Length: 450
Image 1 (cartoon, helix red, strand yellow):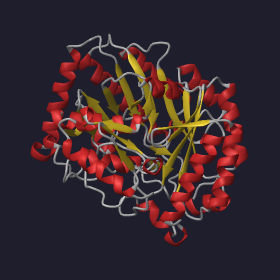
Image 2 (tube, one colour; image 1 turned 90 degrees about the vertical axis):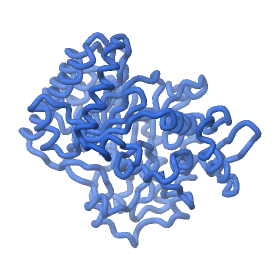
Image 3 (cartoon, helix red, strand yellow; image 1 turned 180 degrees about the vertical axis):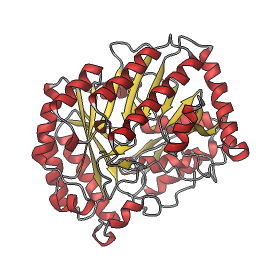
Image 4 (cartoon, one colour; image 1 turned 135 degrees about the horizontal axis):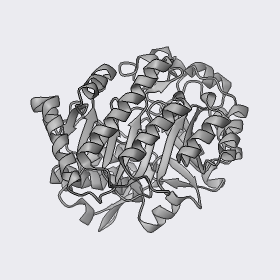
């Protein structure tokens, strides 16, 4: 990644590798999609030789009812049912193609639907997708199934369908409850609506409700944001996830509708972040990693205490490390340290599956160095420290991270580096110091949280 000379509150809140411009994406840089597909086939072949190895699955559903101005995800808004139905058919075909290559004896420990929002799928479409998973692999009773939903597009029946299919966790997009902020980002939803939706989810048996919020939005003030956090606390969600807005209209054209004159300053954003952490901690939430706040009894809290906390391509998790199978347009997967990206074009993705080809377009092979760097990043994200021993082989990154002591973002001890309270607010940006010099920034899209 590109070294960040000045870490500030606008640094990305989500970490995920990106292939674009990265010299480590050797397959795509040299021979394009054919080489990436060959690497993916080889990785799946290796996995097939380990039939008892469990997997995790992340299925991307790139649909929303409307595209919020602040969202920089690649989604399709207001799509007709036949388009969504054909997409679900493609996901089912992709599940079958992968299952044919790796076998069906293995268990799925984690499954996530997002990217977009799962609430754009009908109950029958959701059932079709889950049934395809159940036909392909074993899904144990304690599987961690989660999805992202638009609170404006869910009902009691939808939650009952989700719970009946095995989903235990639901993330609801809130962003901000202030009417002026909502008007500025083109997203209307009242606090009463969010409150009612949380109650509907609980009555349907959903065990974990996560509310996604975002700082740095237009017209946000400390007073209005404090009122939003105070109202969310009263709803009692098990988890609250904090994201930061990044104004990048060249990447997300919808953001041209944002009035940049109304965006909070960097100093104001820093104050919003500090206030969020202080209010949630006072209310009994524990700060996990960079952006997740959970109640004290949460499994993520216990996992952090036990040293079992991990940061997967989906989220923070207490589940053991497993190969991640990415399904859908632009989905990301990982097998034995190698990264794979599906085609970002829905037409190309669907066409590949119709011809019974896996739709992988880019790949990054695993090397001892990339594996070490990613392990160090995960350690920093989960435990807020990195030892000299854990940094063996990536001493350059360790030195760059240690240099941030001058900014008050880390403390350097004889055998380790520890992130400070100030550094925690820019933790994802600190992680860029551990990456290979000269690589491109990571650019995971901000969570609109639809």
